[in-house]
Image 1 (cartoon, rainbow, N blue to C red):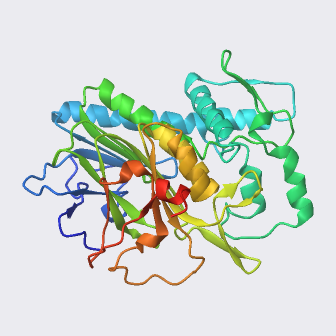
Image 2: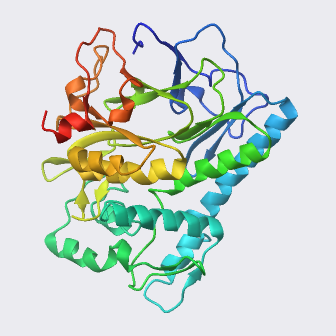
Image 3: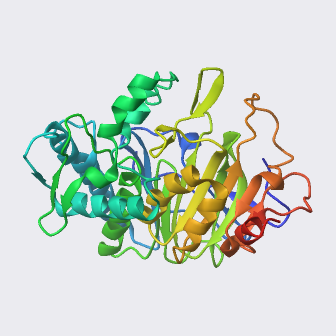
Length: 387
């Protein structure tokens, strides 16, 4: 897809790294794309890429000498690796795995400061969202077959059996001692809604500690930028098209901050004659419906990541109110038409009628299209006023 008239698409990742990344990475698969209206300069970053947390981690820095940059990149990678080691629900040696094995017993698990910090953030958003984010919801996704990518509508008896296992309020957590306990056997903690953003924040922290002033950390499409951009006066970030994740459908201006996206894309299941999202609504214990994608822009990664699923689950009207309650947070929703049409030429861009944005994105967001578009996305204010 070609960008609109006043902008030029720049993929900053398309440069030669200072030394081969480990493992070898296909640059065409790299995360979000970066857009700038200023083409007078193209300052290549020093960057490296790794497979981490089951996805692609790319770290790019500008304005540092080679030795400093390489040391900073390694420190950022080490920070993400540490988050994975501590918080992977699948890793048998992780703190979450230990807490899950002890579920239903009197034994508490003392968490490290990082894991305790991530859990505290998740529980805070869970409370604020009425449980739209829930770190205990993994059994629901498993029952629906969403982890396997094969939908299977569970019978009522199975759904009823999940009730004792799901509920963020049941988690016994003492922030002062960092002790956590799950009171019911079979309960599980899963940080899928916060760990990625938390890892991005810790990587940025490592870069800054190493003296880097301009950088970007991208972990599987959840990313954070800081410092002055290498081109132009603001970062311009391309958002993936929910109909085709190899394309971008919008450009957003940012001074700094993080972006996280929850979206179905091709990740949905067919079961019972219906299409089901892979994102669970913990309150109904069913996959969420009505939205195909939500992008969240926030001051830091953990907040963007933690809000992405609730804003998807809550839908547009409740999501607008929830986003407005968080200063510095903006969001964009794309409605789900319910159709499962095959990929096609999307040069005409996304229909603005399907897009709703928070008021803070007015003047900062542009829908990209081959053809000029007179219509604009509706704002949260317009939605809540019934326009």
